[in-house]
Length: 223
Image 1 (cartoon, rainbow, N blue to C red):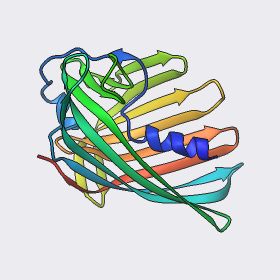
Image 2 (tube, rainbow, N blue to C red):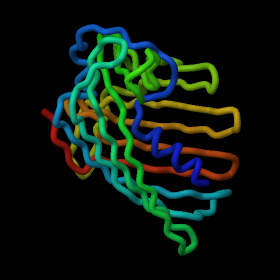
Image 3 (cartoon, rainbow, N blue to C red):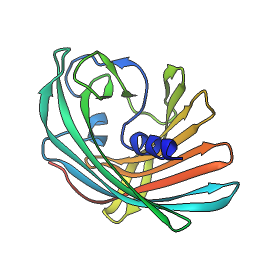
């Protein structure tokens, strides 16, 4: 079970998965507003969820995620990327047993006229995350063939109410990942213009086991 929980944690933060190269270029206008990148930006999220087997709850999940943009560095391919530090802590309680899982990792973000890219290292030209511009309702894209990873823009007019505020005209995006072992991950994320990610609902299923984790924005500071 730990394997699948760790997968959920990582997928809840990266924009998507697959192989795309990042061309350098100027930032796009309104599209880039859904993921504001500026040194000093911070987002704090509350996480809650549960795991069930054959419809029977077996565990609960609670935690926190803090995301910070801490600086800019040069990628090995010659373009600047933003350093995004992710600090996550989840507590899982199962039949009286409590497990605390802490995860700290760095991703590198870049926005060009072509879209939003994320990287896990500063070497190599393949990104691990990509959302293409322009952002339009009904737009779909595929990141890789093995495992199949697809994205779709569901809406650009959602109203999302979370502890961090009420946000209108949110972009709602669904990412789907199915691997060869039968694990299916569906990630639905709401992004508010000039704020960033405000809500994320991630569902992971494997056979009769289903894990759902919801992240909601508690507070933010965006330059």
